[in-house]
Length: 239
Image (cartoon, rainbow, N blue to C red; front, side):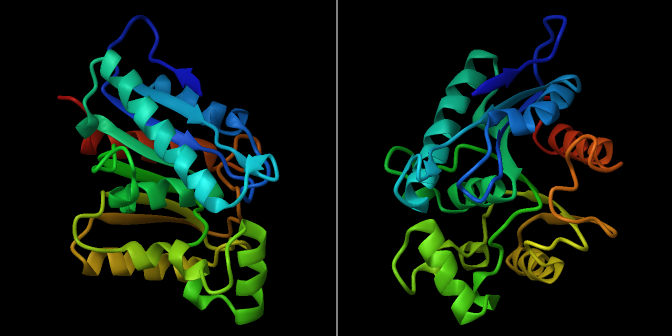
């Protein structure tokens, strides 16, 4: 876990733990370090956390989810030492990391050690796996093999299947030309959340592809940071 704290001894007003992307097989905590530094400069306690990768400690996606749950719990203890309660904390990440964070936040009952999601909100940057029922059968089987689960289990990791009243408020950042997760699937997820009475804001970035939010890759890095900071400070920050 890489920890980024507000400077000058300032008390953080909110906190977020972010999980990197990389299709569960690549990536590291360094990937979202620029986001953490920028958010810390806005008065937010930001952590970039890792998890076991497939082929490097994780047998399947369930191991990755378990690590994310553990990281959220560790983050909550760190935040408590900085004066932040769970109601002031969020989780999120990029691509596969966003998918893992959303599973953990939307299925708290699956945690062996906590009955609550451990966070009050979620910020997802180009999340994967929003509607896996829309995946063609052949591609669905390939994905099941890639993430190490038995045939027919892929739907168990489809985020839209977890939508129910009481899901944490969610902010999604997604490019309209995302080549990994079609914007149509993300819109369907947003609509399902809203129909269930949940707060879910989808910020669309025109002509942007997957991974559009990294510094240097486009002009959108600052836009994403600004919107994320506003969401956290307006929605869950200490007053």
